[in-house]
Image (cartoon, rainbow, N blue to C red):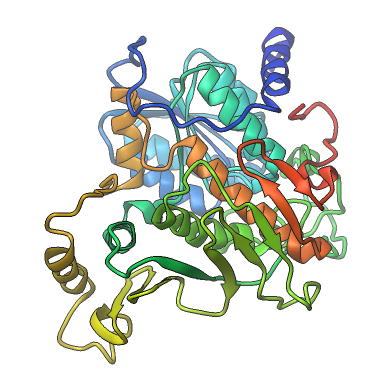
Length: 445
């Protein structure tokens, strides 16, 4: 495609101007602006395992029309095109290698981004700066600097950005957080979040590069490392590649599952758009299976990374535990409601247990959280209404930053004070940790 230098310069300038901007959570409704066409014209960027599920859900909505798919792997790109063409019974879907053919084109209203993490911010900023609404998978960014930049550009252009933290659209998580926010378990003293290991530097051995994969573009803003099928298996595959376990391209399970459970912790603690004020590294911070990093919030609540139940809130009068398909409320040491193990909790169900807890303790609740039934439908509704979605850009950004801060504890043994309003260190820490060296033309300045 011809390079559109003016458009690209605008995108990089917007990113540069945003670097020091604080997070802002304005009112739920933005000012009126031009509405998209009757059918939302969408492009999909990154056509791996996660995107296949997203693509099928968007294709199932008659208010959407998918016009293009993008991937650096020819086989994945063509397979996605075939899926779209089969749905519409034509051959009209474009299949492209360069995301800018979508983000810089006026033929699209919105994009869905499900690339590896190191591409999220570059593509999101390009789309936002060119007037697109964005659905971007979690974690929203690869580093702290990018989280600030993406938030600022979304706000500057009044765009809707939904982060794919889909647990916010599941009833067990919403009700768990409402129980916490309404003081049912008393004053929260600590939170435990359970997920896997931190990322390590890429050390995958080089493999022969096969035709059909643009490896230079796959690496993109990250370093050009030797090709490995561990990072990007060729063609259409069913797994989730292990680029996520490398620092160069992901953030380990801290940003993978941590972006889910820490996000729920923030929802329950009412710190969306903010974050911790202190981070503490565990004694054995550099162990491959390290646990124990802590995020400390302004109200004194300590969040600890553990091998536990998912996301657990501990208050002065009880506990709430929640995970996908699991829920438990404990008061005064006694389990009041719960569905955790289907073999143990026979005769009941998840929905029954959280519904009973809701009826008993939240009937007259003062705090009612955003009730989204489906992450994608919520995005589509907000594109039309111009309201902020359940996991708006500032929420996704602050949850991602908390994950990045936890990674600093494991990567560098970092214990430091943090200013969540300025997204910078108060004491301790190294500003170099907040960003990365960008390669080639793909930069978040």
